Length: 160
Image (cartoon, rainbow, N blue to C red; front, side, top):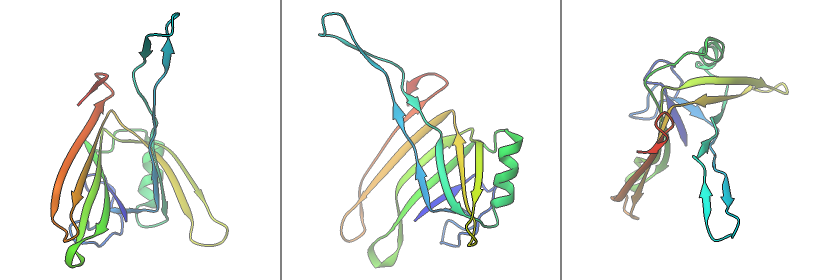
């Protein structure tokens, strides 16, 4: 399960404990690339600053649809930080957040909707100024064993 929250500004229809009113996503995509150049002798390589794609999200139409559409038109920062949670069922059936993304100063930069007669599917992209990825490892019993996080600030061009 993938859930998205814009600090409660955009409300979805999720009802999972601790994630009430978050937005249910069906998919999410993020990419990072950089240019690597080789010097004349081929011994040294130089790398550019990482180039982040916007976060591409897909979802079924729901209570958040109108506001997501409107935000794509407004083109303004929605909140200070959007959060994406990847959730698995852990020990004793409890939901566990095993991966999280924090997207700072999110702006919805594109929006599209499509349907072949069924419930519409929406796609939108989120632009951000800083990103943090967190991963939490759980053992077979559902106990957290390790947690790590890494990030990058696009304003400063430096890892966080």
